[in-house]
Image 1 (cartoon, rainbow, N blue to C red):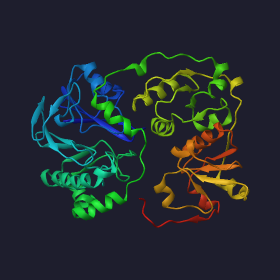
Image 2 (cartoon, helix red, strand yellow):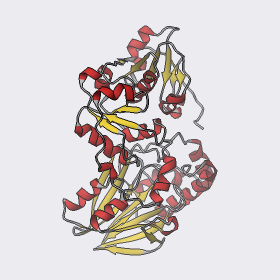
Image 3 (cartoon, rainbow, N blue to C red):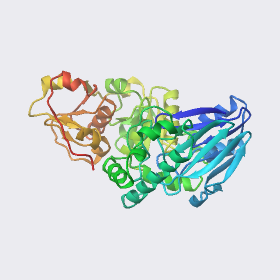
Image 4 (cartoon, rainbow, N blue to C red):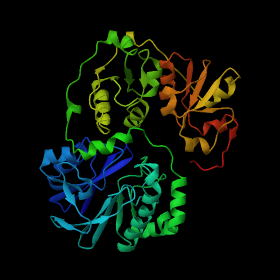
Length: 445
């Protein structure tokens, strides 16, 4: 049995292709499906089945697209009623070549979540989706706060079912947990074993009531676009129009278009700050591009993409396909003469030198990050709320943990005509600069 991980690092996810050397099964492929497709074709494998552990809330499934490209069967829990998909029932077993695949009910992350135990001879692995993660579990509040406690109790039982029913050396391969907001907490590593999780996983260490209380108290924010993903995935939509041509916008019209639509500059933050189209916002494709664009820009807004070259724009379009945003109003590669705007990038040391009563400092990190400690005198507005926030007119300095969100936030405010500075620096540098911090002991709610 060979397990081929397929990373979707900008989503914080992993999918898998598992093979006996000839025939293969794909597990939780995101859209676009090229990663799994390349893994299959480069090894001359026959892909027989594509299974999904759950109806995803964080991305559009690539299973229909992959099935159309390969002829493989697309399968998901029968209770989800996904259009065009074969229904899987907990307890059933099927074969993919020499691989035995057992379907195990593991509700919690979603109501109809399933895990897949794949074995060949003495080799055993379990693909746990958003159930059992590395040292943690998948969050249970994505279907609504009213269901979170009940699903958390089911999550506890599901994880214990896996820990009690599988051998200690069985390798655990989750879909979430590598930076995904579907994870209840940050997890370390990319895989684990059943034996290791028996020793460290909170579902193994805590009784059910304590587990539920602790889990619910630890949930932070998650991207607003999650609201739209499950419905899209239930339709089984296999559209691939993210690859269709879109209009090339006249460079001279970009500044005027920025008054009527979102102009999204996908370059890294340093070249953006040095020169960009007036009114553009910066969401660099070198970071979690789809996550923060989908979280920041109002859903279904008209937008255009600008970048340094066609490769950068193509990468951005593919990333947006992850979350079902397929067709920008246009694309452009702006020449230098239409990039008249500038954005100052600074360090925490410069903030320490220049901070006066006239300056407003805004921390654009998430609430859980703010609660873990923040600068005395700073205000807190998470970057995904900045577009609608009421902020002072004076000079505004924004910071996050590393610079990506600070530049994004600064570009949002600059778009509204405000005077801004983005602190493009590591959060740890605030201590070295002598900036006082206020620690907040209360847990995030």
